[in-house]
Image 1 (cartoon, rainbow, N blue to C red):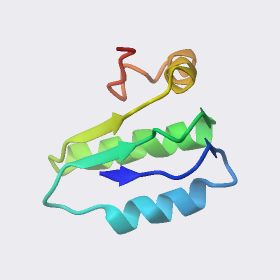
Image 2 (cartoon, rainbow, N blue to C red):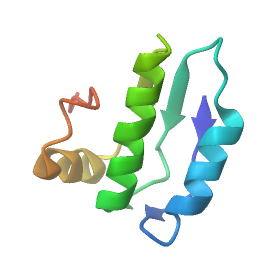
Image 3 (cartoon, rainbow, N blue to C red):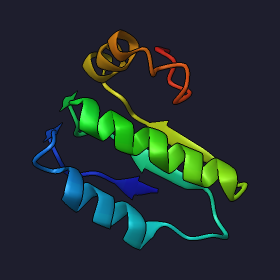
Length: 90
């Protein structure tokens, strides 16, 4: 599981995040992101997550997001991407 060490993810961090995802992505294992430390994201990061999920699906790799704060779940719901990304507010 890839643990992200950002308090917020915006357009300013998306390139670095993309590189991190590419470096940790393997064809033979599930892809999971731990978002425990992330409190805020913007649409560029949501778009990157959607693209990553699609790439995983195309390669028959499970994609999952873990440890989302209530605020992060709220942002994903507002964007309409919570269900697409498999996010549920437990």
